Image 1: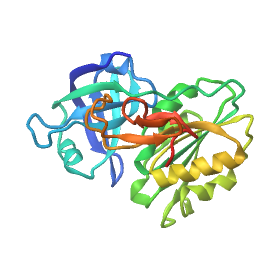
Image 2: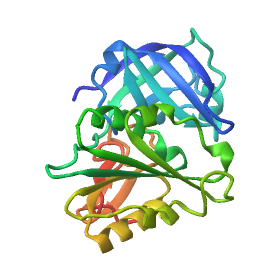
Image 3: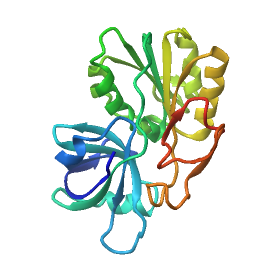
Image 4: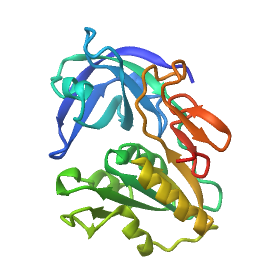
Length: 258
């Protein structure tokens, strides 16, 4: 798919929770071609500080708008957090390989996310909720209450939400793997999507291998170019080294070697 580079106006840039922010861009041409699991690369400053673009998973693409979901951590996101309604951002996208639809015979889709890794699952449920009879579940692991947010839009997409927090402030206390025992895993009818820290995805991969369940993983990485040219986001896979930005970020669940 051809990437678009455009300048898009900020409509909303506000707190979604104490730790996460919600950015909405007016970008009808971009919104019309984005697929679930893809990302955009944003130049957050007109100057050279910071120099490189920053990658963001697409949270939603709806009604001519592209929504992003991010945590303020480094220089790039701190600059982005200062953008106001009416400001214009230089955006390159859509980038990367999208999620595949679940294979025929799938009855239950289980999305497993850790922290900011939950970002691509709203747009995914937008695509999946129209499939009648398909059960959707999100297992979400967060550090604290401050890392959780309003998930009404996910629930409106018929998605069951289950949460684990490390301090027990919301849901079950512990890591997201504590929720695995609450799911009925049928290897012939269950499909997994997962995104989050590598350690969490490695645990999901190991569990899925034991249960003989297939699915896809969306990798997170620092990306410089976003198009596979600089090789700065290479990961090891069973098929050799691949770039997260171009060959991914979506890979087969059992393909990446964490």
